[in-house]
Amino acid sequence: MALAQFLCELDQLGREAQAVFTAASDIEALEAARIQFLGMKAGLLKAAQKGLGLVDKADKPSAGQRFNQVKQQIEADLQEAQARLAGNGSAPVDGPRFDPTVPGEAPRLGHLHPITQTIEELKDLMGRLGFTAVEGPEVEDEWHNFEALNIPLEHPARNPLDNFYLATAQRLGGAADEKGLLLRSQTSTVQIRVMETTPPPVRIISLGRVYRPDDADATHYPMFHQIEGLLVDRGITMADLKSVLRLFAKSFFQDDVHIRFRPSFFPFTEPSVEVDMSWQGRWIEMGGAGMVDPNVFRAVGYDPEEFTGFAFGLGIERVCARRHNVTDIREFYKNDVRFLQQF
Image (cartoon, rainbow, N blue to C red; front, side, top):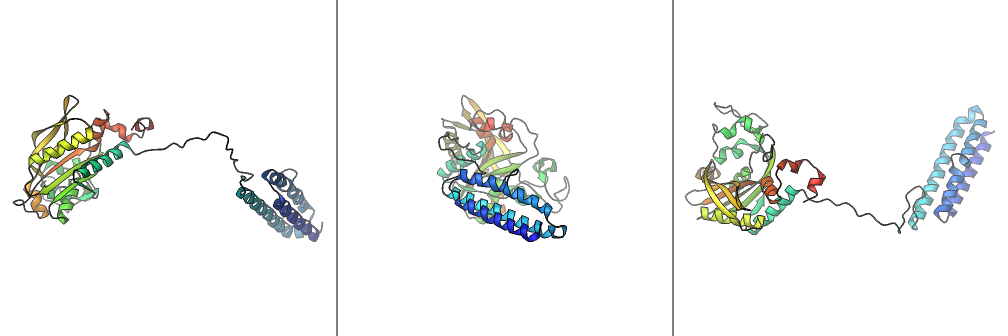
C-alpha cells in the first residue's frame, strides 16, 4: 500500500470519528461510537492499524507516527464528548453513574481526642475564672526549666536519668558545663517566660505536653499533658488558692467537691501542699500547689515584698481518666477506635 493512500484513509477515519462523537446525544450513543472506532477487537482504528503492515518498509516510520497522532486525536475527541454530556447531567461513559434512587450512606465523622476535649474544656472553665491560656516551647533551656524555678544544680530533679536532655547538660556532683537543652519536664517553664515579660498582676494557665523518662503504667507515661495555673497580685493568700481549686474541681466534675491540703515540698513554692479532693466517697490526689517561692519572683524581677501569688499543677490525663472512670491512661494512646469513639 502506498503511503499517501494510508495517510488519506487515516485522516478520513479521524474526521468520521469526530463527527460521530459530536453528534452523540446521550451516553448510550457515545458508548456505541467508542466501540465502533476504538473497540479492541473490531474497532475501525484497530483495523486501520493492520494496514501498517502493508506500507512499504521505508515509509513505515512516517506511517506509524501519523497513526499515533490520529489515535490521540480520536481519544481527545471522545473525552471532549464525554465532558459535554457530563455537563448536561450525564456521567462520563467510563465513570460511575449516579442513581438518585439508591439510599445514601452517611459519612463517618470523627471527633476530638478525649485529651484534646479535656484541654479545650479546661481552657473554657479557667477562662470563666479569669485565667488566660498561654503556651510555650516544648524544648527548653535549663534556666527556665530549673534555675528560675529555684531548682539548684545539685537537686535530684536535674538528674539526666530523670530528664530528656538534648544537648550538653551539667555533670552530676560537679561544676556546671555549658547549659543544655531538654524536653521540658513541666509547664511551669511557661510561667517563668510570662513573668519575665509581663508585670503583675498575672493570671494565667499553661497547658501542653511535658516529658519525663517514666516507665509506662496505668498512671504514668513518658509523655503526658499538664495544666498549671499562676496568679500573682498584691495580697494573694492560700485561701484564694483553695477557692480557685474548689471552683475548678466542682465545675469540671459536676459535683460538690471538697478540697484538702497536705503539707509537701516543691522548690518553686513555699509553703507547698498536695491537693486532694473528695469525690464519689473517697479522697483522690489532684496535684501539687502552693504559694510562689520568693526566689522565683526574684529570678523574674518581681518584688516578693510587694507581690504574692499561688501556683498549682495537675496531669490532664489523670483528671480525664477519673472523670470517665478510665483505669489505665495508656488507653488514651493506643489509637483503638473502639475505645476513643466512646468520648
